[in-house]
Image (cartoon, rainbow, N blue to C red; front, side, top):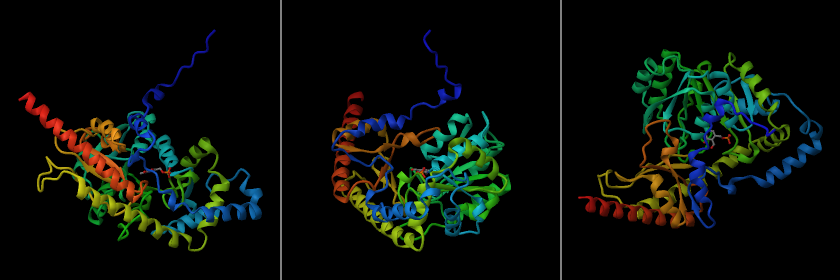
Length: 410
Ligand SMILES: Cc1ncc(COP(=O)(O)O)c(C=O)c1O
């Protein structure tokens, strides 16, 4: 008899990400890609890791290669707690296998089938992927350049998102838009969530990557019992380590810990010890400014190339390409003129050896087809210059053919 594999209904919800399918076309050799969310490998502290690996194995090899506590390596939990800008007990820290795991654990513990959760729009695609298998009702709340729209949040929480399990929000250098929530909006959001009793999941992998000025205080610092805070070492050390952390309210810690045990027992002991050894002393205070400087120069190169190359009719966003100026992080958000569609533009851009991610992938609902995400950190300045020129050509050609089609139709 032929073996029959019957998949759970939830597996049906786990559609292959549209974005991964789209991005397959960007894997062609020689392409300049602004698509991936990959930190620059120039920032990986390879010699420091080589030294720390040797040190950990020599001094602590037996523990480093043994099973360990699910909560995480004690000294690393202490380092994390001490690095945060509000009072955190190391016992509230759970070391995770990347902050992505934190999203998955939260989904398992907080979401029932059809329970509402609230997200910004657009938002991080990987979070939607982590939440969706638990079959929530995802309610998207509008956001603008200052952050989430509080009036819309309140309206949704009184209606379709009543009893929402949490609000998922990225206040710093958001993925995908690169924007940062202002101090005023954070204060208002924090007050509104306290008033509504709405828990917050605050995801902050990019907060350290500011260019001129540190972002305002996290939401978790304003109401620690009402927030879960997710942090990551992927952007300040290296993503291949798969190291992140959660700061959990005491009420939530035991259940999330159980979910973590079921998922992977614990985050690799060796990686935790090596990262802890690398960060001992003032390593990050020397290392992170180097990343900020590099990424700022790449952001500046991209902004200058956009100014130079893109079709802009001053004061008319309908017929112009428009973009924002992120104050940190890795991404910039670009909007095409009216009538254009970034998904349709992508193959034309790929023909010219340049790639981006169409913004539609990041919306839980009502996607804006004109948007795209551009990463400015993976490509070199030369590649940024060449790639932006090619992208602008693809856009101009599409605008011209769009105008011709309109004429023909008329
Ligand atoms: C907003 C956001 N959250 C979480 C993650 C996952 O990061 P990690 O490497 O820590 O799992 C990413 C990765 O790009 C991200 O952009």
